[in-house]
Image 1: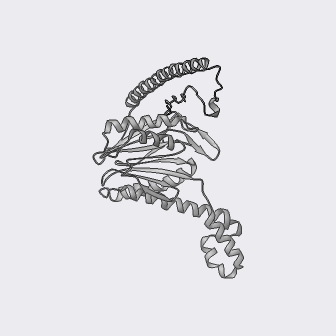
Image 2 (image 1 turned 90 degrees about the vertical axis):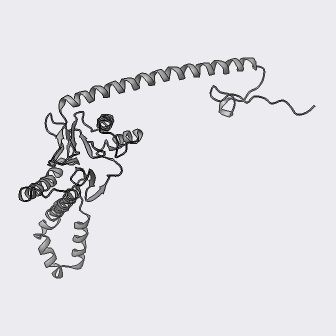
Image 3 (image 1 turned 30 degrees about the vertical axis):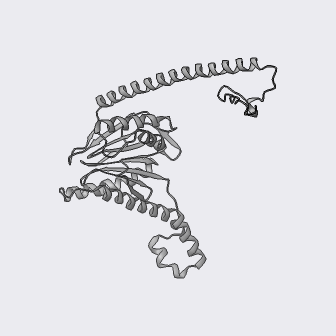
Length: 309
């Protein structure tokens, strides 16, 4: 239960997330901490789904990335490599949990199960294999975004990765549909100006708070256009974005209320005209609106002159 967003602005990427955490059937929003993990000085990951599972997967990912950085500091990690690393450890965690849940009670592990299959009943081997293959983890997803070879955005859902560079934005979590709709309405493109993208990303995150389970707190990062330029967006910038968001929403509410008033008067006038027309033809049997007759929004057809002499 969360929302995470990444949006591309040519050679820069803006990321935003709430702080809501979910573990099994528990949800809470800590007063400190963030779901945006800085993997390198040019790449970050944001996660959605079961917090305990994400912590286990991401700890392995971060450990391997850090290890290579220490050994090969000039060998920059690519975004796709990091996404593939996440899939690798997702599958490893899944296999280990399946082994513990299905094989361990039989005093087996993956290796002994394979080695002893010929001594087992074929039906038992088939059943265990099916259980291992169908074992499921809680659904999780992640956004990987950053450099070095241009600005890249990848989403990973469980063990499937997708590149969204051309789309120009990505959103995950229960609030993802609400956030994505704002980018669609705005006609966002991957080469949009940075300032527009920054505001739109914050705006989309705030709009997604209508979804149940999306937290009110907001964390943001910016990376690009240069290597090693990843920064966290400061509180002063968040406050300015929040101020402009409130100005926009107040204007939207005021404009909608004005429109409601005008449409209300319009409908009242149509109703008055319909009532006047009805009073003038009181002696004539007229079909009701339900039968296709006149209504304020369905004016009666004007009779045409007869063609007969």
